[in-house]
Length: 121
Image 1 (cartoon, rainbow, N blue to C red):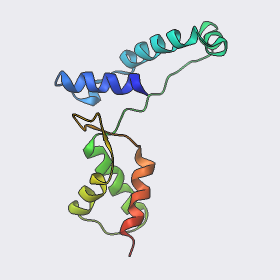
Image 2 (image 1 turned 180 degrees about the vertical axis):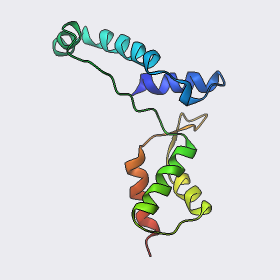
Image 3 (image 1 turned 90 degrees about the vertical axis):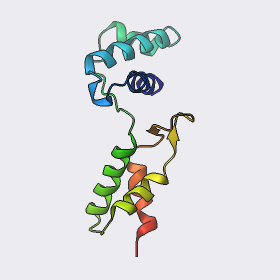
């Protein structure tokens, strides 16, 4: 997770959108991280050396507007009404990192939908 967050933060600092991160670029970084970690783990090393891992499926961190979309989906899935203010309130309940920028949600969409319970009648 740290490598993915670092890449997303580097893109943001360079003024580039999170959506510009290519799968190929991220996969290269993840492979390097795994190879370094694999030196300490026979199981990981074997998986990588034997090419038993076909794909890396990264989950990019959620930005504020993504959190609002998760909240909107959660309200719709439960058939509950919502307003823009409510979506902002749900997003405001989340923890954002890093401490300085507060750019990415520390949790994913599932934890966003759990926050909807606070808004049940």
